[in-house]
Image (cartoon, rainbow, N blue to C red):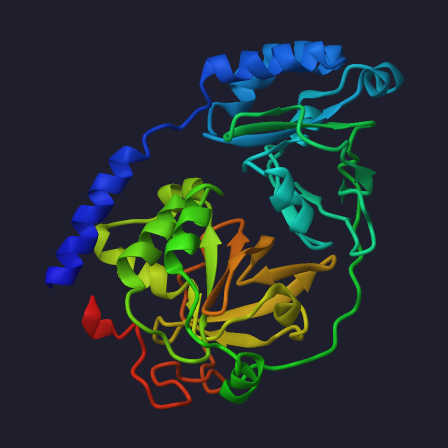
Length: 340
Protein backbone atom coordinates (compact mmCIF):
# COMPACT_ATOMS: atom_id res chain seq x y z
CA UNK A 1 0.00 0.00 0.00
CA UNK A 2 2.82 2.40 0.91
CA UNK A 3 4.48 1.79 -2.45
CA UNK A 4 1.19 2.45 -4.26
CA UNK A 5 0.75 5.74 -2.39
CA UNK A 6 4.32 6.72 -3.21
CA UNK A 7 3.78 5.95 -6.89
CA UNK A 8 0.52 7.92 -6.97
CA UNK A 9 1.96 10.97 -5.18
CA UNK A 10 5.04 10.92 -7.41
CA UNK A 11 2.83 10.88 -10.45
CA UNK A 12 0.74 13.79 -9.19
CA UNK A 13 3.93 15.83 -8.98
CA UNK A 14 5.06 14.61 -12.38
CA UNK A 15 1.69 15.29 -14.03
CA UNK A 16 1.66 18.93 -13.02
CA UNK A 17 5.30 19.38 -13.99
CA UNK A 18 4.32 18.15 -17.46
CA UNK A 19 1.98 21.07 -18.11
CA UNK A 20 3.59 22.48 -21.26
CA UNK A 21 1.52 21.29 -24.23
CA UNK A 22 2.74 23.60 -26.96
CA UNK A 23 5.99 24.95 -28.29
CA UNK A 24 6.69 28.56 -27.28
CA UNK A 25 5.82 31.10 -29.97
CA UNK A 26 9.32 32.52 -29.73
CA UNK A 27 10.81 29.15 -30.63
CA UNK A 28 8.74 28.94 -33.81
CA UNK A 29 9.68 32.43 -34.94
CA UNK A 30 13.35 31.88 -34.07
CA UNK A 31 13.33 28.78 -36.29
CA UNK A 32 11.64 30.75 -39.08
CA UNK A 33 14.37 33.43 -38.88
CA UNK A 34 17.12 30.82 -39.08
CA UNK A 35 15.40 29.18 -42.07
CA UNK A 36 15.25 32.56 -43.81
CA UNK A 37 18.94 33.21 -43.18
CA UNK A 38 19.76 29.70 -44.45
CA UNK A 39 18.04 30.13 -47.82
CA UNK A 40 14.79 28.32 -47.01
CA UNK A 41 12.63 31.37 -47.68
CA UNK A 42 9.43 29.54 -48.66
CA UNK A 43 9.48 27.23 -45.65
CA UNK A 44 10.33 30.15 -43.36
CA UNK A 45 7.23 32.06 -44.47
CA UNK A 46 5.11 28.91 -44.34
CA UNK A 47 6.29 28.10 -40.80
CA UNK A 48 5.30 31.54 -39.55
CA UNK A 49 1.84 31.25 -41.08
CA UNK A 50 0.83 27.70 -40.13
CA UNK A 51 3.16 26.48 -37.38
CA UNK A 52 1.14 27.60 -34.37
CA UNK A 53 -1.91 25.65 -35.50
CA UNK A 54 0.26 22.68 -36.46
CA UNK A 55 2.21 22.58 -33.21
CA UNK A 56 -0.37 23.65 -30.65
CA UNK A 57 -0.92 20.03 -29.55
CA UNK A 58 2.76 19.12 -29.32
CA UNK A 59 5.44 20.21 -26.85
CA UNK A 60 8.24 19.15 -29.22
CA UNK A 61 8.69 18.45 -32.90
CA UNK A 62 11.02 17.79 -35.80
CA UNK A 63 10.36 19.62 -39.06
CA UNK A 64 11.65 18.52 -42.46
CA UNK A 65 11.88 21.67 -44.56
CA UNK A 66 11.74 21.37 -48.37
CA UNK A 67 14.02 23.71 -50.32
CA UNK A 68 12.85 26.76 -52.26
CA UNK A 69 13.37 24.84 -55.50
CA UNK A 70 10.98 22.15 -54.21
CA UNK A 71 8.30 24.80 -53.56
CA UNK A 72 8.90 26.29 -57.01
CA UNK A 73 8.57 22.89 -58.68
CA UNK A 74 5.55 21.62 -56.71
CA UNK A 75 3.72 24.86 -55.97
CA UNK A 76 2.18 25.80 -52.64
CA UNK A 77 1.57 22.56 -50.70
CA UNK A 78 -1.72 21.66 -49.06
CA UNK A 79 -2.05 21.84 -45.28
CA UNK A 80 -2.15 18.03 -45.14
CA UNK A 81 1.11 17.77 -47.06
CA UNK A 82 2.71 20.25 -44.68
CA UNK A 83 1.52 18.18 -41.71
CA UNK A 84 3.29 15.21 -43.28
CA UNK A 85 6.60 17.06 -42.78
CA UNK A 86 6.10 17.61 -39.03
CA UNK A 87 7.12 14.74 -36.71
CA UNK A 88 5.81 14.86 -33.14
CA UNK A 89 9.16 14.06 -31.54
CA UNK A 90 12.50 15.85 -31.19
CA UNK A 91 15.01 13.86 -33.26
CA UNK A 92 18.64 14.93 -32.74
CA UNK A 93 20.99 14.01 -35.54
CA UNK A 94 22.59 11.13 -33.63
CA UNK A 95 19.18 9.64 -32.82
CA UNK A 96 17.90 10.00 -36.38
CA UNK A 97 21.09 8.45 -37.71
CA UNK A 98 20.89 5.29 -35.62
CA UNK A 99 17.26 4.53 -36.45
CA UNK A 100 17.17 1.33 -38.54
CA UNK A 101 15.53 1.09 -41.95
CA UNK A 102 11.79 0.62 -41.54
CA UNK A 103 11.49 2.66 -38.35
CA UNK A 104 8.32 4.79 -38.38
CA UNK A 105 8.15 8.49 -37.51
CA UNK A 106 4.61 9.62 -36.55
CA UNK A 107 3.63 12.85 -38.29
CA UNK A 108 0.98 15.48 -37.67
CA UNK A 109 -0.98 14.14 -40.62
CA UNK A 110 -3.39 11.84 -38.82
CA UNK A 111 -2.68 8.15 -39.44
CA UNK A 112 0.41 8.82 -41.56
CA UNK A 113 4.05 8.15 -40.73
CA UNK A 114 7.37 8.74 -42.41
CA UNK A 115 9.70 5.77 -42.84
CA UNK A 116 13.45 5.71 -42.22
CA UNK A 117 15.14 4.27 -45.32
CA UNK A 118 18.80 4.58 -44.30
CA UNK A 119 20.74 1.38 -44.91
CA UNK A 120 23.82 0.29 -42.96
CA UNK A 121 26.05 1.18 -45.93
CA UNK A 122 24.63 4.70 -46.35
CA UNK A 123 26.65 7.63 -45.13
CA UNK A 124 23.66 9.95 -45.41
CA UNK A 125 20.42 9.54 -43.47
CA UNK A 126 17.30 9.20 -45.61
CA UNK A 127 13.56 9.26 -44.90
CA UNK A 128 11.01 8.05 -47.48
CA UNK A 129 14.02 7.64 -49.78
CA UNK A 130 14.82 11.36 -49.58
CA UNK A 131 18.20 12.33 -48.15
CA UNK A 132 18.38 14.58 -45.10
CA UNK A 133 20.77 17.47 -45.67
CA UNK A 134 23.38 17.12 -42.93
CA UNK A 135 23.02 18.70 -39.50
CA UNK A 136 19.84 20.45 -38.33
CA UNK A 137 19.30 23.97 -39.62
CA UNK A 138 17.75 24.77 -36.24
CA UNK A 139 17.99 22.89 -32.95
CA UNK A 140 17.05 24.18 -29.51
CA UNK A 141 16.41 20.76 -27.98
CA UNK A 142 12.63 20.73 -28.42
CA UNK A 143 12.26 21.93 -32.01
CA UNK A 144 14.58 20.69 -34.74
CA UNK A 145 14.51 21.58 -38.45
CA UNK A 146 16.27 19.59 -41.17
CA UNK A 147 16.57 20.55 -44.82
CA UNK A 148 15.43 18.27 -47.67
CA UNK A 149 15.55 18.83 -51.43
CA UNK A 150 11.96 17.82 -52.25
CA UNK A 151 8.62 17.10 -50.64
CA UNK A 152 7.89 13.72 -49.06
CA UNK A 153 5.37 11.57 -50.90
CA UNK A 154 2.48 10.50 -48.61
CA UNK A 155 1.93 7.50 -50.91
CA UNK A 156 5.45 6.18 -50.41
CA UNK A 157 5.50 2.46 -49.57
CA UNK A 158 8.41 0.81 -47.78
CA UNK A 159 8.93 -2.88 -48.40
CA UNK A 160 11.18 -4.32 -45.74
CA UNK A 161 13.20 -7.53 -46.04
CA UNK A 162 11.34 -10.76 -45.40
CA UNK A 163 11.92 -12.18 -41.95
CA UNK A 164 12.44 -15.77 -40.92
CA UNK A 165 9.77 -17.29 -38.68
CA UNK A 166 10.68 -17.58 -35.04
CA UNK A 167 9.07 -17.95 -31.65
CA UNK A 168 9.73 -16.85 -28.10
CA UNK A 169 10.76 -19.03 -25.20
CA UNK A 170 12.76 -18.64 -22.01
CA UNK A 171 15.55 -20.68 -23.57
CA UNK A 172 15.82 -18.38 -26.59
CA UNK A 173 15.83 -15.37 -24.29
CA UNK A 174 18.64 -16.89 -22.22
CA UNK A 175 20.60 -17.61 -25.37
CA UNK A 176 20.27 -14.01 -26.52
CA UNK A 177 21.33 -12.60 -23.16
CA UNK A 178 23.79 -15.09 -21.76
CA UNK A 179 26.46 -12.34 -21.46
CA UNK A 180 24.36 -9.99 -19.29
CA UNK A 181 26.44 -8.90 -16.30
CA UNK A 182 24.15 -6.25 -14.73
CA UNK A 183 26.72 -3.50 -14.96
CA UNK A 184 24.50 -1.14 -16.96
CA UNK A 185 23.20 2.14 -15.58
CA UNK A 186 19.46 2.74 -15.15
CA UNK A 187 20.32 6.34 -14.37
CA UNK A 188 21.60 6.78 -17.93
CA UNK A 189 18.46 5.15 -19.30
CA UNK A 190 16.26 7.56 -17.35
CA UNK A 191 18.31 10.55 -18.53
CA UNK A 192 18.13 9.46 -22.18
CA UNK A 193 14.38 8.86 -22.07
CA UNK A 194 13.67 12.22 -20.46
CA UNK A 195 15.50 14.02 -23.28
CA UNK A 196 13.82 11.95 -26.00
CA UNK A 197 10.16 12.59 -25.23
CA UNK A 198 9.58 9.65 -22.85
CA UNK A 199 9.56 11.36 -19.45
CA UNK A 200 6.59 9.34 -18.19
CA UNK A 201 8.26 6.00 -18.83
CA UNK A 202 11.51 7.42 -17.47
CA UNK A 203 9.72 8.22 -14.22
CA UNK A 204 8.36 4.67 -14.03
CA UNK A 205 11.85 3.28 -14.55
CA UNK A 206 13.31 5.56 -11.92
CA UNK A 207 10.66 4.65 -9.35
CA UNK A 208 10.34 0.92 -9.99
CA UNK A 209 13.61 -0.43 -11.32
CA UNK A 210 15.78 -0.68 -8.25
CA UNK A 211 18.04 -3.56 -7.34
CA UNK A 212 19.03 -6.38 -9.66
CA UNK A 213 16.96 -7.87 -12.44
CA UNK A 214 17.29 -11.42 -13.65
CA UNK A 215 19.99 -12.44 -16.10
CA UNK A 216 17.66 -12.20 -19.10
CA UNK A 217 17.24 -8.44 -18.78
CA UNK A 218 14.08 -6.57 -19.80
CA UNK A 219 12.58 -4.81 -22.83
CA UNK A 220 10.44 -1.69 -22.38
CA UNK A 221 8.03 -0.53 -25.07
CA UNK A 222 7.60 3.18 -24.39
CA UNK A 223 4.77 5.36 -25.69
CA UNK A 224 5.51 9.08 -25.87
CA UNK A 225 4.49 11.43 -23.07
CA UNK A 226 1.56 12.83 -25.04
CA UNK A 227 0.13 9.38 -25.71
CA UNK A 228 0.40 8.36 -22.06
CA UNK A 229 -1.28 11.52 -20.82
CA UNK A 230 -4.10 11.06 -23.32
CA UNK A 231 -4.71 7.40 -22.49
CA UNK A 232 -3.90 6.62 -18.89
CA UNK A 233 -6.77 6.56 -16.37
CA UNK A 234 -6.85 6.53 -12.57
CA UNK A 235 -3.77 6.29 -10.37
CA UNK A 236 -4.54 2.68 -9.52
CA UNK A 237 -4.04 1.86 -13.21
CA UNK A 238 -0.38 2.95 -13.18
CA UNK A 239 1.25 -0.29 -12.01
CA UNK A 240 -0.64 -2.42 -14.56
CA UNK A 241 0.04 0.19 -17.25
CA UNK A 242 3.77 -0.08 -16.69
CA UNK A 243 3.84 -3.88 -16.39
CA UNK A 244 2.08 -4.44 -19.71
CA UNK A 245 4.79 -2.45 -21.50
CA UNK A 246 7.68 -4.48 -20.07
CA UNK A 247 8.86 -7.89 -21.33
CA UNK A 248 11.08 -10.12 -19.13
CA UNK A 249 13.79 -10.48 -21.75
CA UNK A 250 16.13 -8.04 -23.47
CA UNK A 251 15.25 -7.85 -27.18
CA UNK A 252 17.24 -5.47 -29.36
CA UNK A 253 15.67 -4.37 -32.66
CA UNK A 254 17.56 -7.05 -34.60
CA UNK A 255 16.10 -9.67 -32.26
CA UNK A 256 12.52 -8.39 -32.56
CA UNK A 257 12.44 -8.31 -36.35
CA UNK A 258 13.47 -11.95 -36.51
CA UNK A 259 10.25 -13.06 -34.81
CA UNK A 260 7.53 -14.33 -37.12
CA UNK A 261 4.00 -12.95 -37.25
CA UNK A 262 1.85 -14.34 -34.45
CA UNK A 263 4.70 -14.56 -31.94
CA UNK A 264 3.52 -13.61 -28.45
CA UNK A 265 5.83 -11.98 -25.94
CA UNK A 266 4.90 -12.29 -22.25
CA UNK A 267 4.81 -9.18 -20.10
CA UNK A 268 4.97 -8.53 -16.37
CA UNK A 269 1.18 -8.04 -16.31
CA UNK A 270 -0.38 -11.42 -15.64
CA UNK A 271 -2.46 -12.66 -18.58
CA UNK A 272 -1.32 -9.88 -20.91
CA UNK A 273 1.00 -10.62 -23.83
CA UNK A 274 2.24 -8.69 -26.84
CA UNK A 275 1.38 -10.10 -30.27
CA UNK A 276 3.82 -9.40 -33.14
CA UNK A 277 2.49 -8.74 -36.65
CA UNK A 278 3.59 -6.68 -39.66
CA UNK A 279 2.01 -4.25 -42.08
CA UNK A 280 3.95 -3.12 -45.14
CA UNK A 281 7.20 -4.17 -43.50
CA UNK A 282 6.41 -2.26 -40.29
CA UNK A 283 6.62 -4.14 -36.98
CA UNK A 284 3.28 -3.99 -35.14
CA UNK A 285 2.72 -4.82 -31.45
CA UNK A 286 -0.93 -5.33 -30.46
CA UNK A 287 -1.90 -3.05 -33.33
CA UNK A 288 0.66 -0.37 -32.39
CA UNK A 289 3.68 0.32 -34.68
CA UNK A 290 7.23 0.48 -33.37
CA UNK A 291 8.62 3.77 -34.66
CA UNK A 292 11.79 4.41 -32.58
CA UNK A 293 13.74 1.15 -32.14
CA UNK A 294 16.61 1.03 -29.65
CA UNK A 295 15.90 4.40 -28.04
CA UNK A 296 18.24 3.19 -25.31
CA UNK A 297 19.99 -0.06 -24.57
CA UNK A 298 22.72 -1.43 -22.33
CA UNK A 299 23.51 -4.84 -20.90
CA UNK A 300 20.41 -4.81 -18.65
CA UNK A 301 17.60 -3.33 -20.69
CA UNK A 302 16.48 -2.01 -24.06
CA UNK A 303 13.77 0.58 -24.76
CA UNK A 304 11.81 0.85 -28.01
CA UNK A 305 9.47 3.75 -28.80
CA UNK A 306 5.92 2.88 -29.89
CA UNK A 307 3.28 5.17 -31.41
CA UNK A 308 0.63 4.60 -28.74
CA UNK A 309 -0.17 2.89 -25.46
CA UNK A 310 -0.45 -0.90 -25.90
CA UNK A 311 -4.08 -1.98 -25.69
CA UNK A 312 -5.08 -3.16 -22.24
CA UNK A 313 -6.67 -6.42 -23.37
CA UNK A 314 -6.00 -9.91 -22.01
CA UNK A 315 -4.98 -12.39 -24.69
CA UNK A 316 -7.42 -15.24 -25.19
CA UNK A 317 -4.75 -17.91 -25.62
CA UNK A 318 -2.06 -17.72 -22.96
CA UNK A 319 -0.99 -21.33 -23.17
CA UNK A 320 1.99 -20.46 -25.37
CA UNK A 321 3.06 -17.54 -23.23
CA UNK A 322 5.92 -18.24 -20.86
CA UNK A 323 5.27 -17.27 -17.25
CA UNK A 324 7.76 -14.48 -16.46
CA UNK A 325 7.28 -14.70 -12.70
CA UNK A 326 10.48 -16.68 -12.23
CA UNK A 327 13.65 -16.27 -14.25
CA UNK A 328 15.64 -19.20 -15.57
CA UNK A 329 18.01 -19.03 -12.60
CA UNK A 330 15.18 -19.08 -10.05
CA UNK A 331 15.49 -15.44 -8.91
CA UNK A 332 12.32 -13.65 -7.93
CA UNK A 333 11.01 -11.30 -10.57
CA UNK A 334 11.64 -7.62 -9.86
CA UNK A 335 8.07 -6.77 -10.85
CA UNK A 336 6.40 -8.94 -8.21
CA UNK A 337 2.81 -7.61 -7.85
CA UNK A 338 3.34 -7.59 -4.10
CA UNK A 339 5.82 -4.75 -4.48
CA UNK A 340 3.17 -2.26 -5.65
